[in-house]
Length: 370
Picture 1: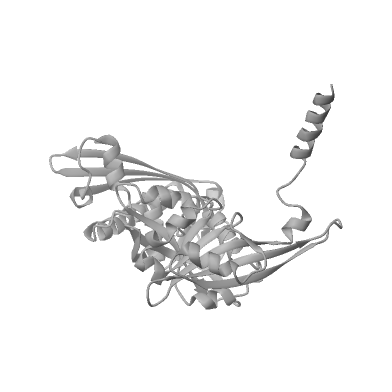
Picture 2: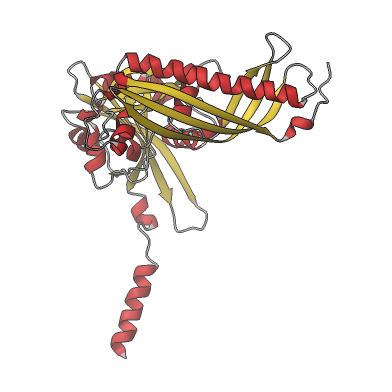
């Protein structure tokens, strides 16, 4: 009986004990984002954006402070250990939301740094990865009113990405999968400071094209929507369609749902890749009056489908000619013809796009007045 009571007490004490007490948490710096740059010798420069918490045993009493550290060294791990020599607190990476590489570091090679974040016991595969185009110190000095911490702001920005079909996002887990696939290429978020706003904000500006762990080009925002359709990564956004009757006027369709299916066939030395894109939309605005008759809705539908097919083919051909397989053609081919060599299959691939746009919702509202 005594053993049971002791065992019960031990279980209760374990279950109700947290990871940190308020005394422990006052001695820890939580990293919210890692920023990776390189010097002129291609050695890493690491910036740690950290949160220094302060908690007391008084209910509701808590506050924190943002501290940014900069360190240098031969490897990422050495740099972080060197930063630890300047801090009287233990650095904890378990709460990091983002790993940000500068374009200079990404062009040199992400593979020189990524292994630490994957292998280290505090590494998180759910944090986002992005490439920053601009002055890194200016980024870290930016004060964003809606969120003090850049790592947290970037995570919220990525989570809110479905508001735009022209934005690209990639997590650490996604990247680790992409880098071992046959295509060896992927798209990471390209971020920059948007100085056109009333205050400086971080914005997603298309994507960075990564091939064999190196940034080789940029995916412009104007091409991002077509890429997302082909890659089946549309979560939401809008389609702007030319007005059927008024030149230089547009109609806006909001994307409610999108799904892209692949069909691949080998015919002699040619590979036919068919992308079947189904999009469910609702009409959200017009710049000029319309009655929205069945005939006019069919015209809008046809123009939306035409735009999806046209821009998808243009983006595909552009990167096919550059031999950059950001569309995972080699992997799609390998899944069906796994015994055949899929290397360099992109150059022999012909893309066919089938688009089906369904318009539903407020199409019966025609109270637009001049």
